[in-house]
Length: 405
Image 1 (tube, rainbow, N blue to C red):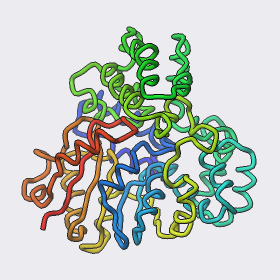
Image 2 (image 1 turned 30 degrees about the vertical axis):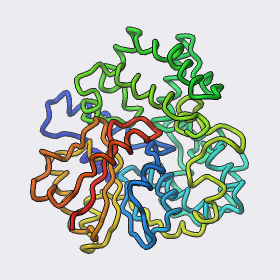
Image 3 (image 1 turned 90 degrees about the vertical axis):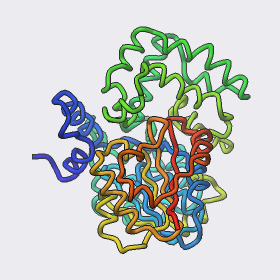
Image 4 (image 1 turned 60 degrees about the vertical axis):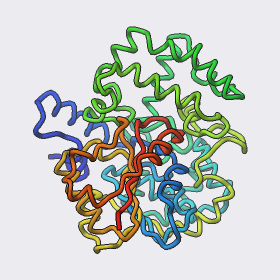
């Protein structure tokens, strides 16, 4: 019998009304998604915080994923962040980050633990400073073993960002690229946008024209490693060859932002944040933000729960900001309506909702009841601008809705 966490993930992913082949693919993704997927979240927190316009005293409801952004939001001084996730590993990782920033002795040890994430000293620090304050579920997760028999906490001694579903996918992509005489790490030598463009055009753009790459990326299961289920694959492709879509997204990642400012590019091309004090880092890992994040980490509440269920158990008019990542791409119309009914009920005046989609347009028109969607103002031009400036470059659309009245 499937465990409770696995049933929750399957309920969110598997389209029971779909054809048998689609259901089998959905179940295969649900199985892959039950472990660690994202050691680092792939939504740009700077775009998030600008769009959300978080004010002191705000209560935020967000999906946790890897926990990077929810800690970064603390720099905007919200009163509370309620973070939910169906993935046990993501809950454990977010709890680990929250406790570590509170309990590790200084910034350098915190940076070594989560920015470098490849030192044996991290394991000693875990045992001395973090373990005694970690909840039982998270402690059991980190001290347990993965499918390869490795103790999970040891990932912080050997390169955490090379692990998990996404880390393994990026590693496989690097291997395939090297088999075609392309070393992705060469990109990190670029010093200007112009050099980034030249390297991309010479090395990476032609890669997506190879027959094997076009064939493999046309398989819906090929993008499980990016955390993309079959339903989201279809939205991402939008009738185009997937190789062309991926080339366009990688081009944005590689060419639209200076490498010195884009830690997402470092993760993609270097499988980590890089070494040295000047490498780009998420806000929660930056030295200037460390005292603030440390002091406010107690404001984070982590729940292993579904967003709709969490909101259904909350008081009316009790939240100011909502972040759904790309979770709505997985939802049926009925699930969307249930979620937005609870959002509208729990929203305070001026509430803001931010989410991303694999495809470019917002997925809500035509899927939510008109009377429900009519309560919200879609900020079209702002959303297009946020999409353009999202450094992760994965998503087709970043969308902002604001409660009317």
